[in-house]
Every structure is written in structure tokens, then in C-alpha cells.
Picture 1 (tube, rainbow, N blue to C red):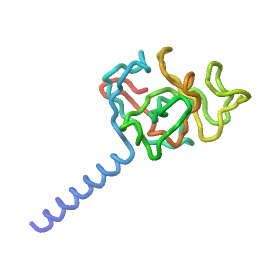
Picture 2 (cartoon, helix red, strand yellow):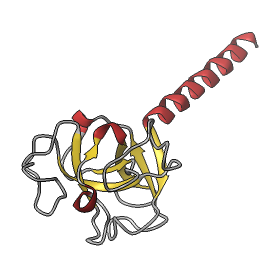
Picture 3 (cartoon, rainbow, N blue to C red):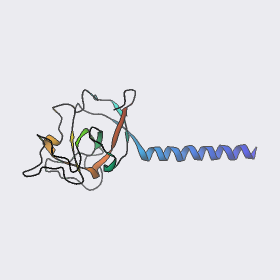
Picture 4 (cartoon, one colour):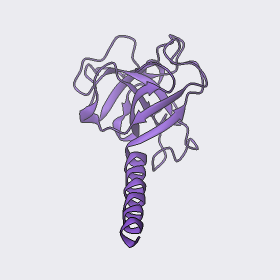
Length: 153
């Protein structure tokens, strides 16, 4: 009986450790708005895996913190100023890539600076790098893997 009890306790500890590990690597967000239509619609739930800049590829759908204003001002700490609100966009250019046409990059800037990415919504009316310029990768939450109940992204 004691052996069974120890096995149950060990199993419960493994489940708790697994849940904590998954929570640190994966997040579920709910899309609010139309910037990613037709790929994602308002209200869609998306599974996001936390990733770093080196793990990004062009075309990835990413979740990142938006700046407070078009000047690119951020408050200290992730999502501190936005009340936990995030942007979901597609990576169009990585550090060192040529700046795509139509991006608010500033005069004389021809390549995406280190630590920055260019992101665009799938909807042409999206507010993204066309208006805001580069997005800092230190404000990246992760990469959207799939729509819950829908296709992989």
C-alpha cells in the first residue's frame, strides 16, 4: 500500500512539474481585432510558443508588445504599459535584412537594425511596421504555432 501511495505522489509531482514547464514555454492568446484576417479572425484562440530572436524566421506569425506611440516609446518591463495587450503580426524582415518598401524606417536606413524586426499584419489595413517602424525583439512573447481548433500557422 505504501508503494502505491509513493507512486501516486511521484506521478502527481511529475504532472505538476510538466504543467509548470509547459506554462513557461507555451501561452494561449485570444486575437482581438482584424489585423491578421484572413489568417486569424477576431476571437480566435492561438497557441504561442515562447522563442528568442535567433529562432525566428521570415513568415512566422509572432506575438509582441506594441509601442505606446509612433515614436516607438516603451515602458519598462514586458507589456507593462499596455495592460498585457499584445500585437499579433507576421515577420517580414529580420535583423540585417533589407528594409522592405513602405516601412517607416527613417532616412538613410537600408537594413533592419540589430535587435529589431519588421512585422506586418495580413490585413492591408493593419497598424504595423508601415506606421510604427521597427519592433524591438526584446518585446517578443513568442511565435504562434496554431489556431486552437484550427490549422497550423
